[in-house]
Length: 345
Image (cartoon, rainbow, N blue to C red; front, side):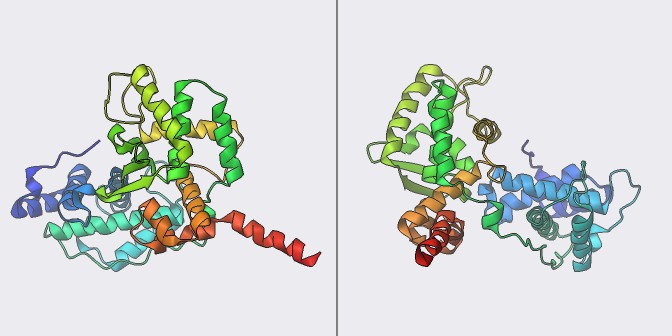
């Protein structure tokens, strides 16, 4: 749920008073408001900040508050207004030893701990913006010993083909939509938010292009594979027949009773796709919708050996960001090890 910003945050004097009051009274709602007001007005991405990033920052602040001043404690354990680098170092140490400070107190991965620390840094910048204190320097985030290509591997093409063939056996409209969504992610490299935000007018079939609205409001044109065009044409006809009302512009729409014609959510799409993963017995190391984007990135790089082209297709600002897909190319590694048998015969 989006927080409605109060006018207190727009006036510097009121902002300072309200921030002081919120810290003294442990007013979590007001502090979350302050954080969002700062992010929307002064952070690098401002109003284009993604909902997912904003959700992560809110979670980080709630966790930090639970550590500094547990809700049932009469007084704070750590004074936020007098925080220092040592304070943040103690917080990071508690994340490593205790895990989350919110219910349930689950262990956190190094990546999750790093996200918490980034969110807390933004909170201190918000307090600095409010005139409460100077933001302290921050300790480094915990390092993850597992490389990214091992944590989030791309789906091997044999499994990807099996997934599509599994969906071909069903003739219901929802499975047709799910297959199209998976192909848009696995062959065009779309992120989940980009998928659910696609609009009918973004599909330029005559030009064989897809206009994608990416992170930070950036737009890119993605060429469509020829084999994907018939699926898009079929879905455009089907969606209008099945649900003429609802969200007229969204490409991927819900077909559930009660939500017929409305946009499908990222969670709703994840739930559907996960069901298909389970149906074909996909190994547990391959999970999530973002994995299909990794699959596309790996295939782009394997076909082109060009990081610039891969970055352009995926919407990366720098080719160096796309270098991970060279490491994800397990098929290339299989070719290398299989060559050993050939050379030693």
